[in-house]
Length: 155
Image (cartoon, rainbow, N blue to C red):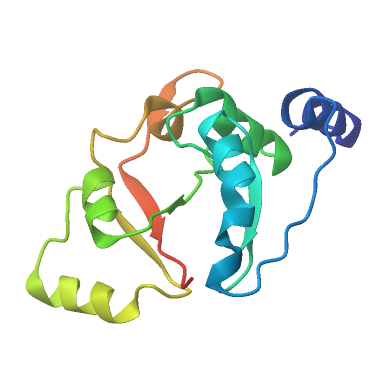
């Protein structure tokens, strides 16, 4: 694990880059334009904290190795440990992109009835997941995730 001072220093260098974090309040769908800076930040390798239906979540571009590393640092998880991150998806089609799909009609019905919602489904990870999400180095070997936690929060 990282020490608190190392983590704060890492956060200051990689996440803030001299800029202060700011809070944006959204009041209905007419305020969505206020999120444009957050969307750009994620596209450019930044980290955004969002409320979900059950907790606050760190959001980053899953394809950005640097952004995934920042999340590990923010969560104080050393990259040498087997502590996987979950994936937030915006649709069932995106879930199918990063997993081997929904295996049966009954499973599809269950997922469709629960999502969006405060649930995490553990599914078989596909090869479409970027390496920084599924490959991790431990002290002596490389381990590869076979499953991924999938969430699709409400709103």
